[in-house]
Length: 261
Image (cartoon, one colour):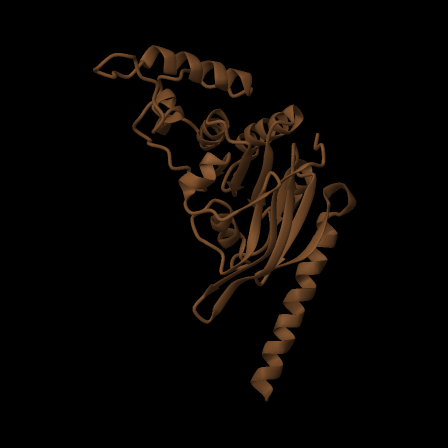
C-alpha cells in the first residue's frame, strides 16, 4: 500500500518538437508503493512523457523532482542511477540468450581475479531465487527467452528491472497483445509488487478495465495535457469513456465548423 510519500513529481512539463507541442504543462505525482495508470489514445503524449521521466529526452521546460530533490536527467543511465527503470513494449530482451543471462544483461556477475570470467552458477541461482520470490514460474532459467510465452517474457523484463534495484518502475503497455491468461501473470506480479510496497509503478495503458483493476490512481492524457485524475476506486470505465466521447464529439464539431467556414 502507498505511504503517500512522493517518490517522483513532474511539474508543468512542456515538450516541443519544432512547432509541435507534444506535452503542454503536464504535472503528476507518483507515490511510494502505489500504481499509477496513465491512460490516453495514441498521440496523447504518454510515450513522450515516459521518455522524459527516464532521461531519454529532456523537457523543453518544467522540472522533475525525485525523492524531494529537483533533478535534470542527463541520460537514461543517470535516471537508472536514481532508481528509475523503464520496461518498454519491445522489452529489450536478447531472445537467443537464456533467462538468467537476460536477468543480468549488462550487469553480469563475474569471478574475481585477473580473467574476470562470468559466474554462471551465481547468476543462475540468483535469477531463480528472484523469480521465485516474485511468484514468476518458468520451467528453467536456462531456457532461451524466445521459447517463453509473451506473458513470461514480460515478467522477465519486469523482474530484471526489479532486481536491478530500481525503485521507480515505468511500464509501457505491459499487457499489450496478451490473452487473459498471460495478462493475469503480469497483473499478479504487479499486485504482488504493490503489496510489498517497495516500488512506485507508473504504467501506460490503453485498456481501461484492466487499469482500474490494478491501479490506485489514474490520469487521462489528451492532446498533451492531463485532463482527468482520480482514485481508481472512485471512477469507472463508463465515466472514462464518456470523457473520451465528449472530446471526440467536440473535435468532430470543430473539424466540421472549419470545413464549413
